[in-house]
Length: 389
Image (tube, rainbow, N blue to C red; front, side, top):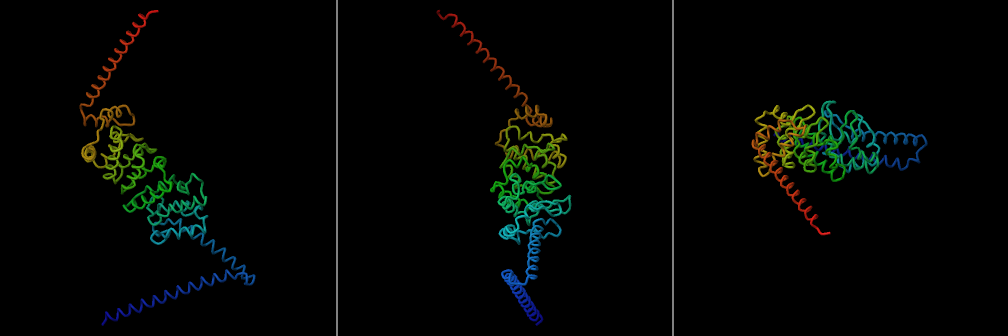
């Protein structure tokens, strides 16, 4: 009996809520219709009322424009109420911007940045970056509209390359931040859209140090974006940051080292198999530290060696490393630590003998060629002397 009573009460309560909701919706529609009618017949009102209507219209448009701008610039990680892809559609956002296009080129928010700059990351404070998963998918839309409306200089690409007020960060760099697998997936999707639109370009990877930025993560290694960038521009693996660090260096020093270091080293061997790939391990940064040293300090020498050998022997057993050339490169390149020379010698102790043998063979061949050339010149001279006049 009690259950039946409770069910009846729940049904009555639900019906009351439905009626109240329906009544509120009907009242809202009546207000909208009344406003439309008032605006249509505004000139039929007395002068005082017409002036009041003009004031209210101006305030309405200003308040709505400000609210749209505030929505785009929302950046409070703890109390977020900005754009939300689970609630807002691109069509809705585009409609709002088409009515108020000036909001895209108006700075605002806590950091006095453009709206598009707030869509990629959130701040808890000046020292914390969080991924803005709710709004990041709208970045291509805002960039496209800003370009179509001519709101930024051409080189600013719709605001994508505008730097943060307090740092040198831009939106493309912001798309390299990571803290979860969901972030990697969503930010890769946005990067792919921007690439298709021609707003993310191959040269940006090195110009804005994107691969190094991606590899410098505190807790999560963004594997999908790493593969995307490396496959697009393998040379980014050899590009150093202003601190002289390679992507492999940042992976070696990251808390997410186990996966990141392995993938970065595998990529180096895959794309630079003969000599440069192996020597990436021993490239010195501005402080004289190498990825090999940083990784050994982080997880231990034995584990680092296991990763290296697993890559060289198991994963790329069909890859032929030219140890002799790699050794010469390590010996003469001042940016490569001597650990690289010792590593190669330990791996292939007879490489020096092979190198000397090839050098001697080349010298002998050169001597023979020189002797042959001299003999040919003497024969030629004799024939000239015997030629009748």
